[in-house]
Amino acid sequence: MARKLSRKYRKIMFALVMSASTSMIVSCIILFSRHVPSRVFLEQWAKAFSIAWPVVFVAILLIAPMVNKLLNLVVEND
Image (cartoon, rainbow, N blue to C red; front, side, top):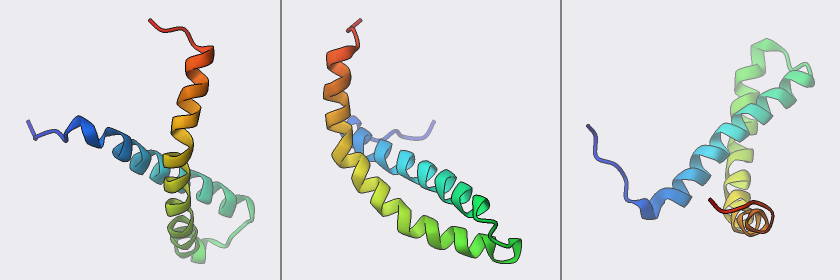
């Protein structure tokens, strides 16, 4: 089995994976809804994704601690 990353990287890895997947999905849906022609769709998608991903990544890093604090107020502990 491959070696796992240290637990200290969990938050940054979560932000990377979550921001990448979210940016891919949202940018695709926006382009699709704007009827971007198929001949330029992938190029436009890559461009939109490359702009969105860093923004979403930073947003997740900044917002996640506040969301966790809010959820601690409204969700029971085990």
